Image (tube, rainbow, N blue to C red; front, side):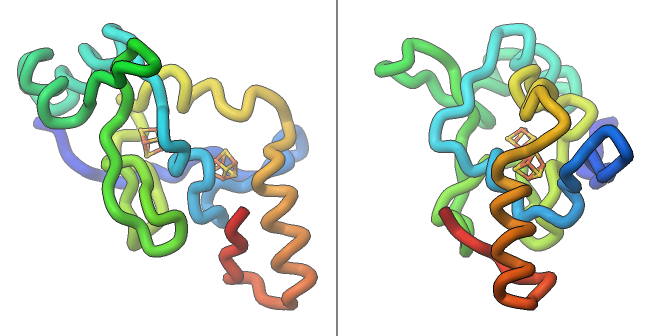
Length: 133
Ligand code: SF4
Ligand code: SF4
């Protein structure tokens, strides 16, 4: 049975220069996060629902992009964020079933958002500061 267990995401290592565990989730606040049919099928399997049901509940078809995208929810920091994001814990709730684009991001040892966040937190001398872009 699918659960909403929160699994820690990419944290800092000698190779990885960003720590998603300390980040409010900038990349999850993109207005249009495109998904593939394969991503939708994976999420459907995760929640044990049909692909049609998953499309209805978790995604929407964006006419401009001509693609399925993740639905969003309200967020105190970014106004809107992915509907799978836990807005209290600031974590993805479907980490193991997340779409390919989420797996691939940022695709390099540095995350620009995280560098910006570290700079702002240092500047404000507040390790919890949530800088908005
Ligand atoms: S913006 Fe960067 S550091 Fe923050 S959650 Fe996304 S990948 Fe991780
Ligand atoms: S599925 Fe998870 S990793 Fe992808 S945007 Fe949503 S909350 Fe972020």
